[in-house]
Image (cartoon, rainbow, N blue to C red; front, side, top):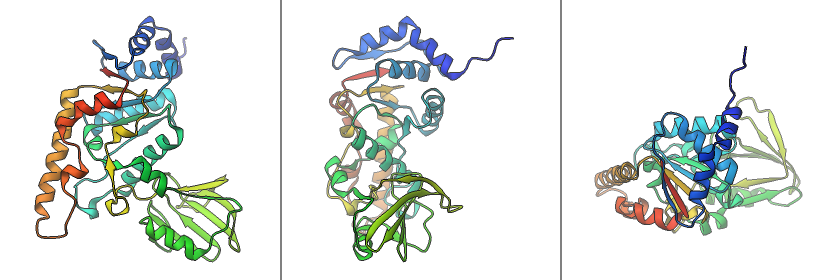
Amino acid sequence: MESPMRPADLLAHYQRDPRTAALTAALTPHAAKVELKGVCASAAPLIAGAQHVTAGGSHLFILDDKEQAAYFLNDLEQLLGKETPLFFPRSARVPYQEEVTENANIAMRAEVLNEIRVRGNGIVVVSFPEALAERVISRKELNDQTFTLALREQYTMEFLDDVFITYGFHKVDFVYEPGQYAIRGGIVDIFSYSFDYPYRIEFFGDEVESIRKFDPVNQLSINKMTKAVIVPNIGNSTLHESVEPFFHFLPSDTVIWATDVERARKGFAAAFERAESAFERTSGQIQFTPPDELFIAPERLDELLALSAATSVHL
């Protein structure tokens, strides 16, 4: 009895397929545009995964909506491993309403931006139009506002208190979600906006003696670190002066894969209209930043795709 084919076997099969080599060759010229026909079900992530493993580079996958993006992400995780593909969600269910902003979503958006900032190339991002329609903190300001603590460095608790408050973190007794920090004697717990687990930083006097990631549920250590990278709340517009399209973060050789550019344009339009409607309801209350400064107008999508990517694939 033959054993069932594993995801790795499927991926290897598609890597050997002559059509994968043909796709890689078609994507080689600068600004190439490729359309794949007859692709259905899980063939798309298999083709994309095989092309990524074969040729490398950075890739952005634009699915029609959040549900499709989640299915596509799951398929890529099975093929490439859970650590490779990153999911870029939208920050909030309703624009201009802080109470319904999702801290977990802000953390995932920050993680993607930080990964691009640190790695520079080889990133694989899965998203959908309503998430990509939101502008993000500029690369320069993300660099300037990312704070790193390392072993043997020295800091006073008062200094860290000021830094965390400036970065939009909230002081609590015990951290359990991104955006929180706690100080107890010579121990600092901080839940950065770009990681799944918080840091526990232990001091000997003013010197950083140990850095660990820990599980906030059972308080057990996960692994030791040599440094802690603290990324601010990228969704808080009061913490930064300029924003830009997510596409500007992408490396110059990024391949952009889209199921349908016209549907993507409609997704951008839906996000922009939702923001305009929410902004109008705030009239006479707190002064908020206008939608055209926080969201991308749908008519700019083609321009951004042309300027941001060397190549693109229509699935």
